[in-house]
Length: 272
Image 1 (cartoon, helix red, strand yellow):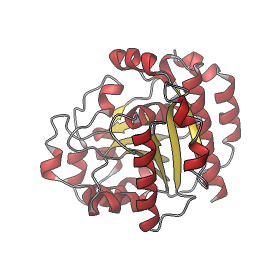
Image 2 (cartoon, rainbow, N blue to C red):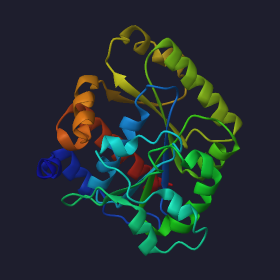
Image 3 (tube, rainbow, N blue to C red):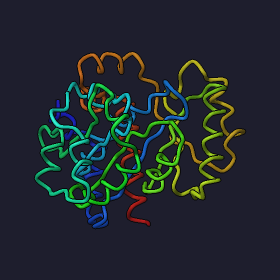
């Protein structure tokens, strides 16, 4: 499976393009859904191996303290959780960081996951501001951090989003999907985030909402929309197996779109 992943011509091109070292300060990419059910966590679980395939050590952080779902996408359970890092405060060494990571690196992929306890207890014991502080301590331990962000807007989420170099706003081409996406873009503008910080990701492109999708240019006059094709039926199969689409079927158009998104993110680092 992973052999086919690395034999993919698009990924080979991406790896070849990664000939410049990224910044010593590891970039942080946040992914947030404009509303529930748009597939933001699926984007995270498939974008992570796509970034890792470029040859960049990638750490996924599930910041959904109450309902962490990324572990289920990979068919894993955390033996140690991100809470153990937070309890150490600023005194976090590489050994502890590695111990709390769930290793997802099969083959040549350097990929790992930091998750809250799956019972949701982290929501009562910590907050996202503490997680943000933790990032300052561990940022040198990985080359890229990819964070699955919750949608509950409060000062703690803003603190974490402020730390992100890029925010991927995932939405779907429905009337409420576009409305909530526009609402988040307004919030980002009020927070002072420039257009270069936010990337709109249309998930399930080419699905049953074609009428709305064909009018997106009228709703998004200045924003660039990155389209990820619909793969709903395949996604359910992969979730059941605990293997993301990008690993199960690397040649699928969905996987290819995530590789292109990973390339775009990497190139943006070189240009910044």
